Image (cartoon, rainbow, N blue to C red):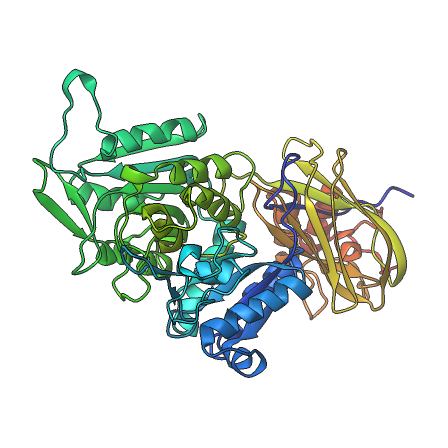
Length: 557
C-alpha cells in the first residue's frame, strides 16, 4: 500500500511567528438583533480558524446586566465575559446610536471614545457627580491599563456590517492583489504658520519632520511613498492606488472633517473633503490600514467622519482605522505614540488591537492624578475594525498542507503537515479541526511543520473543516471528508450531487493538482486509478475515459 497523502492544498494563514504567541482568548461581538445575522457569518469564520467567537446583542445586555445606562451595562457585560469566559477581544458592532461611546471629562475638551470599554477596573464615576473618567485627583477610579482589546465597526444596518465583514475576510484570505501589502503611503501638510529652516533646522512640530522620523520605524523591505504639501488630486489618486499602510498628519476643521493639503504658502489651503475622498477611493481588493493624525477624523457623532467613510466604503477604503474623536496634536506633543505603534506592528505585535493598546502607554501622563494633553489623547484616540486583525508586514505568502491519513468515524490520531511554497516545513501555524458541535480542536505546527492531533473522536461521517492561520500568510479554511464518501464509481472529483464524472471534474482536478485550487471533497473519488494517491495519473485516466474511449474508473472501496 502506498502512503496516503490526503488533501494537499494551497492555503494561507495569520498571526504567528516563532517569537510571537498565538492570539489567545475568545472574541466577543456586541451588536443588535438586526445586524446579528451578518456578524454571525464573521463569528463562524473566525471560529473555524480556531478563534472561538460569540455574539451578544444589546437587547439582551439591557435585560441581563445591571446599570443606570447602556454604557455601564455593556461594560459590565465585557467585564463578565473577560473574567468568566476567557474573552480578551471584543468588537463593538454598531454606531454610537447602537453602542454609545463614553464622553470622558477633561479640562481641555471632552473626548468621546471607547476606552471606557477597554479599561475595566475601577468606577469611572466614583465621586458620583455624573462626570465620567475624571483624573483620580478629582475622585474617579480610572487607570491606563487595558484589560480587553476592543475595536468598533461603525455600522448602522446589516448592509454596512456585511460590507466591512467582506473586506475583513478578503484582506485576510483572498485579496485581489498581495504586493500592495509591501507598500506604505506617508503624507501630510504644514500644520504651523511658519518655520525656521535655516541651517537645516526642522521645527519639532513640522509635519515634514514627523514624516521623516517615521522611516526608522518601518522595515527596510517596505516600499515608501512620501507626499508633502501635494495637491488634492495627487492625494486622491494615491489613496485609490492601494497601500497596505497609510499614515497622515495634517489638519481638519470644526465645520466638517476635512483633510487639508497646501501647495504654496502656509494657510493657503487646497481643502479635500475627506468623506467624499474616502467614498470615492476605488482600491477594491487592496484595503488599507490607516493611522490618521488630524482633528475630528474619528468623531463618531459626525456622519462626515473620515474613519466612518473609510471603513464603510464598499469599493475601497480599508479594514482598520486609528484616529482621534476630538482635537489632536500628535506630531507636536506625542509622536512617540505613532512610533511605538509602528514598532509593535513591524516587530512582534501584529494584532492591531493589542499594538494600539500597548502603544497608547506613550500617552499615559507622568502624573496620572492630573489633566493634560496626553491624557486627553489617550481617551480621544480609538480603533475601528477587528482588534485581532493581524497587519501584514510583507507580501503575504501561501502554503501547502496534507493529512497523514484519511479521516474516519471513531477515535483517531493524525497529523496535519504544513509546508511553504518551497516545500519547507512551517512552524507556528495554528491548525483548527472542527466537525459539527462534537469536534473542535486547535494546535500548532512544530519545527517540522507537523500539527499532531491525538485521541480525536469523530462521531459521524460527513464533512469537517480544517482552518489554518499564521502571520504574513493568507488564511485558509478547507473541507475534508470523514468516512466513506465514494458512492459507486470513482471520478466525481468535484462532489457533484448527481455523482457522475464529466469535464467539470477534469477541470477541478487540474486546478487542484497544478493551480493551487481547493482539495477534492472526497479523496477516494479523486483517486481515479485507485492507487492510493491523487496525482497526474488520475488526470490522464479520467481524460482518457471521457474523451478517448478509455475504461471507466474502478468501483469505490
